[in-house]
Length: 168
Image (cartoon, rainbow, N blue to C red; front, side, top):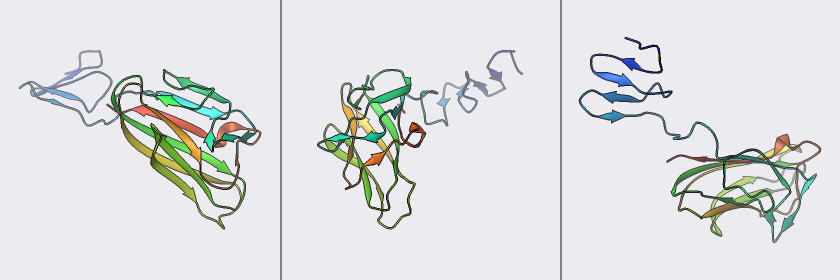
């Protein structure tokens, strides 16, 4: 039966909290089918400059954060792990040219993921990358523009975002 709170009780299991697929087996076994341990992103960042300028191709545009629960430095574009665990990153960057656009995600200076948009793709395209990275507390990730084209934030920054989650 239902207790009126966020718990469901049956003869063999108890549903726990706000994760409806998590159950405590009355025999002492814990099961959970969700893979994101936090319900909110660690950070959501968007560049505020009209062009994503680079230093040594590192994307260091003036970032604004929609969510920043720790670890993202707006001045550098670096995201630091506040604690050890597995992190998931998602990046979208806008390309106004029909030239090759390449973005790398680096973990402590080593490339761990690449998003690439080939030549001949029409204007107004999005370069996207995804990465899952095991990080220790204090490790960092950042983005590099490897391609030959400037990436544009345009008048609106809705086309570009850098998002991080802690999975475990």
